[in-house]
Image 1 (cartoon, rainbow, N blue to C red):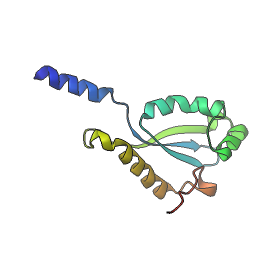
Image 2: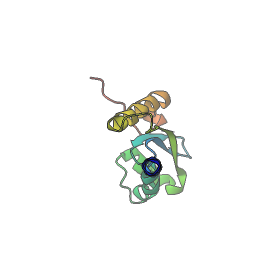
Image 3: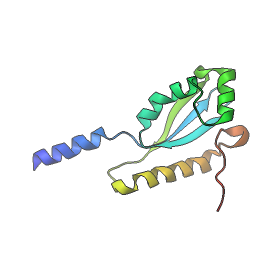
Image 4: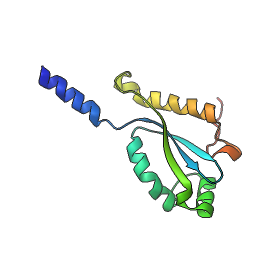
Amino acid sequence: MDRRRQLKAEYKQMLPPMGVYQIKNTVNGRVFIGHSMNLNGNKNSYPMKLEFESHHHPQLKEDLKEYGTEAFKFEVLETIDPEEIPKGMWRDAVKKLEEKWLEKLQPFGEKGYNKPKKKR
């Protein structure tokens, strides 16, 4: 039974952090808020996305051309604890965290790169 507990603990340690991040333009203060099931992967890939202008937001692309990749900083805002949430609910929990941060920071228009969600 100890081996099983050890394997379970090792598995949980292998899980990538999941949660909400921001990409901040340090020159003009605009931010992009996003969510990810693998924050480490996003952190590692965002400089390449910026450099190759493959980010999906046109204003961010324009600012990238104007200020360069050095002007952008990746920051994790909040993560979920996978031990406290059933596995099947991780994605929903991460999306709710993103909604919370979008509401809190309001990164729309001149303040950010996100587009407001359309109300149903």
